[in-house]
Length: 130
Figure (cartoon, one colour):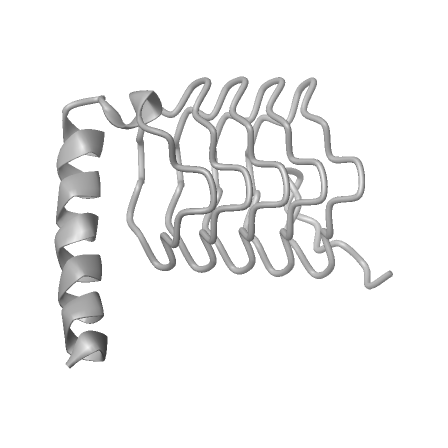
């Protein structure tokens, strides 16, 4: 069935993505709007990557380097972002509800309109509800 074929394709796509992460090639790929829920990108080098509109809910991006990354409108709800580097990243309108940002570097990051409800901030404090 078409549904089964789509699931198989998604599984193969995830394998290719993980290979690209391992080879440090992922920042060269257009990833705008990609569905990367629950992906493990711990320690990945994503400087300059375009993940605008991507679904990274529940993903592990701990210790990832996202310097100057474009995450505008990305869904990072429930993601593990501990010790990640978001220096000068664009997080405009990103969904960061329940995200873990302990120790993350947000220096120069644009968080305009981002939803940080119940997120654990870099200082370890939970963001109060809006």
